[in-house]
Length: 623
Image 1 (cartoon, helix red, strand yellow):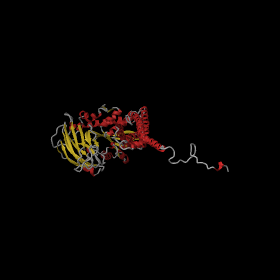
Image 2 (tube, helix red, strand yellow):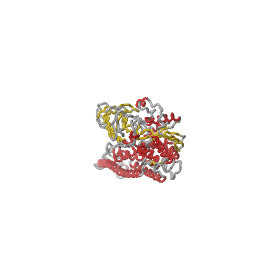
Image 3 (tube, one colour):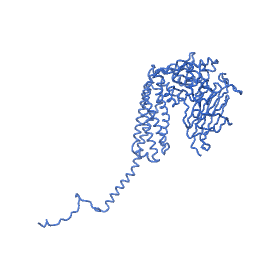
Image 4 (tube, one colour):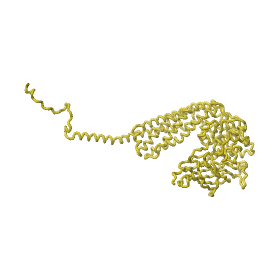
């Protein structure tokens, strides 16, 4: 063995490029600590930058989303109404293009506000409120344009470019085919409306609050319209004879003499509907129906409420109740007793509704050359005719002729593709005013009609309610000159008396001028006290919430005694009131309501002059 072989090899220190096991504490002093400090600084800087970056991202995308939302709003502002009267083929295409453009902008706004940054920021308490509002508003606008307005625009038929017949039949077929889509769209609109109402309304960012408030107002207007359209899509086709012939009793209400549903029933007609073709089989006046009373069995409550007025036997009193289905059932039964014919439903309208229709169709002309227009039909039928036709028989004949002329004009317009959309829009306006009411003798159709204003139903749901109803008790035609106002004030918060205090102030004014025809100022009630021409007498009924109590009342500042009753669950308080010509009387009711912490449902009785109503909801009761 050589010397080299027998030497012991010295251990080698690890060097660069050589594999080695690291030794704790090896290397230059402080190296590990510096590495850890650098890592910690990087982590802290990253953590600090995240909120700034998130805020910057939300700010930039928020500005872009706002631009998209404004663009969508501009598109929708160009639409007067989703069922606008001017739906010529060209206009319909433009409106559909505007809806689709709005849908694209709203979808982009929704995408811009839908990322993880927006989601996380919306979860922050207080600080995240406007983020949650903007994010929710963008999502709501996307659903509104894409799932509601687009299918609605596709479903509604356009006006025909010419005057070919059969327009109503074609529209009913299209409406029936579109009914499922319209029902879905109405359901989505209700969902979106509820979602927007749940969004924060008062945040630290006013712009977000304004956006939510504007969208909420739009949805509050649109959702009921869509529900009305969806109901119409289900009931109009069968009611207008798509599945077989139908017949309806149509009553023209004379609002110069007030009744619960509007005016006293005057002229009438029988409407025939067969596969969308409308025609009138008969016209008549109230004299023919005087002895045609019939009792359809409206229950003990109805009998007790109207005992003495005999609404099932006295034709002029048949619609004293504001609940239209009561009058409709009485009229249907009376017609069957009078003729042996059953009808499939009842329709009621008044001269204001006729003026709406004539505004869409153009003037109508009676056999004697009288021209009926949207501007003169109310005055002509409710005032002028009483001076022109002194003889009662001639006057009633004029009313029938006016109804016949207007009906013929309406039938012609309904069959004309150019005028039908405007006529349908006029009908919708009259329904919303309560001046066109519809009842069906078919249970499922009536169930749907009863859920909407045009069903004329006195609602029986619990909650705050306010309704002023007057019935003419003089037999005069002086309600043409009647003004009504209602102030409902629940601002009191002392509920120690067992309910929420509500003060209702009713003001009635008689503007009847001197020199009116005798038939207008007639006093068929033959009062035991002295009256002058133009003095009126009214049964004034206030419909309160279910369970409401009357704590006291004053008439013109003096204690007044009112009778009480119930109708469809509502507490009803009634005063027999003499209303002299050119006088004003004020009735104040002090009520204890079960709940009055939000605005009540308001019943508006349609007369010549609309009711002026002010509702002042209060706050939470204190014991």
